[in-house]
Image 1: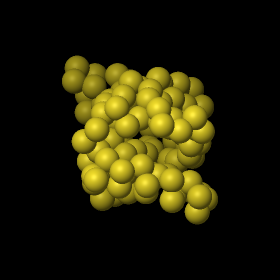
Image 2: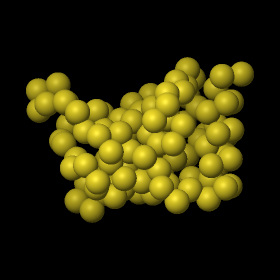
Image 3: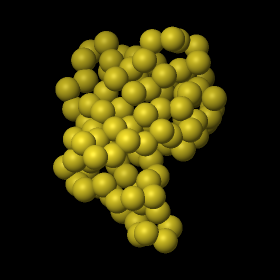
Length: 108
Protein backbone atom coordinates (compact mmCIF):
# COMPACT_ATOMS: atom_id res chain seq x y z
CA UNK A 1 0.00 0.00 0.00
CA UNK A 2 1.26 3.47 -0.69
CA UNK A 3 0.53 6.22 1.78
CA UNK A 4 -1.48 9.32 1.08
CA UNK A 5 -2.01 11.33 4.25
CA UNK A 6 -5.21 13.32 4.51
CA UNK A 7 -4.47 16.52 6.40
CA UNK A 8 -8.06 17.68 6.92
CA UNK A 9 -9.58 15.55 9.70
CA UNK A 10 -13.01 17.03 8.97
CA UNK A 11 -13.03 15.57 5.46
CA UNK A 12 -14.68 12.37 6.71
CA UNK A 13 -17.37 11.72 9.26
CA UNK A 14 -17.15 8.72 11.54
CA UNK A 15 -16.83 5.46 9.65
CA UNK A 16 -18.00 1.95 10.38
CA UNK A 17 -15.71 -1.04 9.93
CA UNK A 18 -17.42 -4.39 10.13
CA UNK A 19 -16.12 -7.94 9.92
CA UNK A 20 -17.75 -11.26 10.68
CA UNK A 21 -17.33 -10.89 14.45
CA UNK A 22 -16.11 -7.29 14.67
CA UNK A 23 -17.87 -3.96 14.32
CA UNK A 24 -15.99 -0.72 14.94
CA UNK A 25 -17.20 2.87 14.73
CA UNK A 26 -14.18 5.07 14.07
CA UNK A 27 -14.32 8.83 14.67
CA UNK A 28 -12.87 11.30 12.15
CA UNK A 29 -9.10 11.34 12.31
CA UNK A 30 -8.86 7.80 13.72
CA UNK A 31 -8.08 6.26 10.36
CA UNK A 32 -5.94 6.87 7.28
CA UNK A 33 -7.07 6.43 3.72
CA UNK A 34 -4.45 4.72 1.58
CA UNK A 35 -4.26 4.40 -2.18
CA UNK A 36 -5.90 0.97 -2.15
CA UNK A 37 -7.18 0.65 1.38
CA UNK A 38 -7.46 2.02 4.87
CA UNK A 39 -5.48 1.84 8.11
CA UNK A 40 -6.95 2.20 11.59
CA UNK A 41 -6.29 1.42 15.25
CA UNK A 42 -8.15 -1.34 17.07
CA UNK A 43 -8.07 -2.42 20.70
CA UNK A 44 -8.56 -6.04 19.64
CA UNK A 45 -6.46 -7.91 17.06
CA UNK A 46 -8.14 -8.81 13.77
CA UNK A 47 -6.89 -11.89 11.99
CA UNK A 48 -5.09 -11.49 8.69
CA UNK A 49 -7.30 -12.36 5.67
CA UNK A 50 -10.48 -11.41 7.54
CA UNK A 51 -12.99 -9.91 5.10
CA UNK A 52 -14.42 -6.55 6.17
CA UNK A 53 -17.01 -4.05 5.01
CA UNK A 54 -16.14 -0.38 5.41
CA UNK A 55 -18.66 2.44 5.13
CA UNK A 56 -17.22 5.93 4.48
CA UNK A 57 -19.30 9.09 4.61
CA UNK A 58 -18.28 12.70 4.02
CA UNK A 59 -20.03 15.77 5.39
CA UNK A 60 -20.10 17.33 1.91
CA UNK A 61 -21.88 14.38 0.32
CA UNK A 62 -24.77 12.44 1.86
CA UNK A 63 -23.93 9.31 -0.14
CA UNK A 64 -22.09 6.59 1.72
CA UNK A 65 -19.23 4.76 0.07
CA UNK A 66 -19.32 1.06 0.88
CA UNK A 67 -16.08 -0.82 0.35
CA UNK A 68 -15.16 -4.41 0.94
CA UNK A 69 -11.66 -5.43 1.80
CA UNK A 70 -9.41 -7.92 3.45
CA UNK A 71 -7.09 -7.43 6.44
CA UNK A 72 -3.51 -7.69 5.17
CA UNK A 73 -1.71 -6.71 8.38
CA UNK A 74 -2.44 -6.36 12.08
CA UNK A 75 0.55 -5.17 14.08
CA UNK A 76 0.79 -4.26 17.73
CA UNK A 77 0.02 -5.65 21.15
CA UNK A 78 -2.75 -5.64 23.74
CA UNK A 79 -1.12 -2.82 25.72
CA UNK A 80 -0.64 -0.27 22.93
CA UNK A 81 -3.38 -1.44 20.58
CA UNK A 82 -3.21 -2.79 17.05
CA UNK A 83 -2.73 -1.04 13.71
CA UNK A 84 -4.93 -2.80 11.16
CA UNK A 85 -4.35 -2.43 7.40
CA UNK A 86 -7.23 -3.32 5.06
CA UNK A 87 -6.76 -3.66 1.32
CA UNK A 88 -9.90 -2.81 -0.67
CA UNK A 89 -11.07 -5.49 -3.08
CA UNK A 90 -13.52 -5.28 -5.96
CA UNK A 91 -13.85 -1.50 -6.00
CA UNK A 92 -16.02 -0.30 -8.84
CA UNK A 93 -14.62 2.39 -11.11
CA UNK A 94 -17.06 4.87 -9.58
CA UNK A 95 -16.01 3.98 -6.02
CA UNK A 96 -12.31 4.18 -6.93
CA UNK A 97 -12.84 7.57 -8.60
CA UNK A 98 -14.74 8.88 -5.59
CA UNK A 99 -12.08 7.61 -3.20
CA UNK A 100 -9.37 9.25 -5.32
CA UNK A 101 -11.26 12.55 -5.45
CA UNK A 102 -11.64 12.52 -1.66
CA UNK A 103 -7.93 11.89 -1.22
CA UNK A 104 -6.95 14.60 -3.71
CA UNK A 105 -9.46 17.10 -2.27
CA UNK A 106 -7.53 17.18 1.00
CA UNK A 107 -4.24 17.92 -0.79
CA UNK A 108 -5.57 20.96 -2.67
